Amino acid sequence: MVHQRHILLVLSAAAVLLLGGCQWTWRARTPVEARRPIDLADAGPTVAQRATLDAAAAARAGGDYEQALRLFREILAENPMATTAYVGIGDIQLEQQNYEDAERQFGQAARLGLGSLAAQCGGGGGLQMCERFVEAVKAYHRALTIRPEDFDANHQLAATYLRMGKATNAVVFAEKAVDVRPDDGAARADLGAAYASVGRHADAIVQYQAAMERIDPTPDLLMSLVNALAAEQRYHEAVNTTEFLVRLAPSADAYERLGWGAFRIGDY
Image 1 (cartoon, helix red, strand yellow):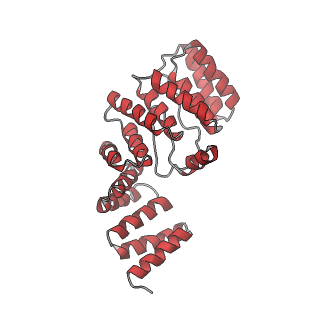
Image 2 (cartoon, one colour; image 1 turned 90 degrees about the horizontal axis):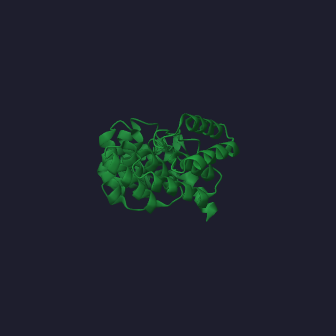
Image 3 (cartoon, helix red, strand yellow; image 1 turned 90 degrees about the vertical axis):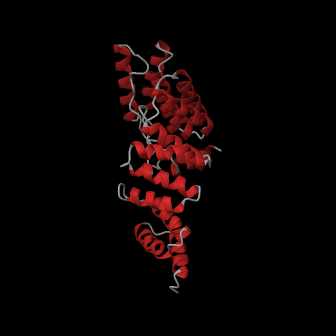
């Protein structure tokens, strides 16, 4: 199970999460990195605690996890409500593949910071990374009760619903994310994925193409566009897109799709 989780973390979504928001990007399908700057406002730290949080963040960014953990725990000894420290510890444990411990830290942050957008997005993002999707969804919904127009909470909630296979739910929040930030290519790509998952392939094509105008095309994004074009029987466009995909990232799947498309247009 640990191995499976690690593979999913590497391949999927998860992404660049910010404690002050929780960014998911279409391109960010890499292992967890030092990704959330410490949001100091939600815990109400003293001047000394603020300095300690800054030092913990710096230690973590520098890869000194032992020092960062010591400093985060020092903060919690003084202020057990410091949700930023729980998220910081959870992030490190996630990077070290201590998934169960990470889940507890993120869950604690979300439970304690009920009125904090940062705590809900930070905790929700970590729970999402740990595949605790139901709890992550609850955290994101709490974030949206605090700030309904928050781009990151809407975007992450849509992405979580997609991973849960609840595309109909995802559409609502993916559309909201695009409404809030129409120039965000990753949000456009995720909205396309939501549309495709509910059979709205023509709408998905529009969003995928809009995404490619805003972010560099990735193999995943191109293949998604190819599949949507094929579903709409736009075979010549599908073949042209697949040819570009083969040049960008040749793979067995891409060549198979190219051969299929060539057959559909009668290019034997």
